[in-house]
Length: 112
Length: 117
Image (cartoon, rainbow over all chains, first blue to last red; front, side, top):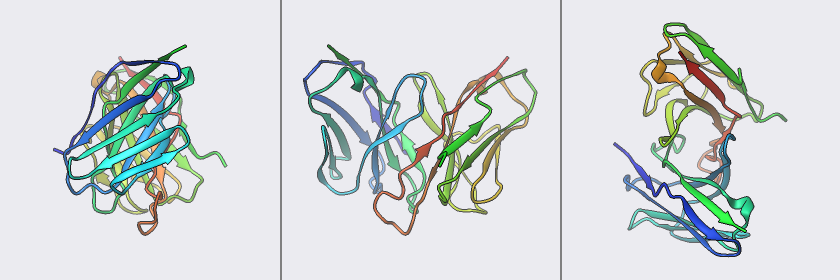
């Protein structure tokens, strides 16, 4: 059974701080890794994808991938109250790269 | 460009009733997916269609059937609804084009909130 694990939280940080969200996965063959954000009552929306070991930055967001440790993380710099949401980690599970397995999500709360 | 649309938005069924959830995308994507989301359980893949004419089981396929009607449309059918199928159902699609970076990104519809009494 392929699995993606996340701490459910809630993770609470003050406005302006760095929020660090972590995810581990079980399938060493996984090649594609995604972070989605989901506001309460809404559908998931993509924040970033990462394929290669190392860091990938996009604005205030940085994804980090370590395939040897089967670990992917998301850093949010200068956290804002509008970042308060559930963050979902997703990993591909098939060779064609189409199907994803999602973690249960980490709830982030940013206080002003 | 509406993206991924789902109908209906809300539905209440009695145990044993059947219904079909509809999903359509206008992004010319090749792959489509059905998920269910329950509190504390995250998104779980029910079925997916990697390309027109193919369907595959996901993590939780029991009690569901799917049809990839054409490239745009992918429906999910509950033949005999059970209270355990009360959930929020999301449809998603992705381009998936020859391994090009980012084309396996999935885009989600607004969801269908289903209650089975």
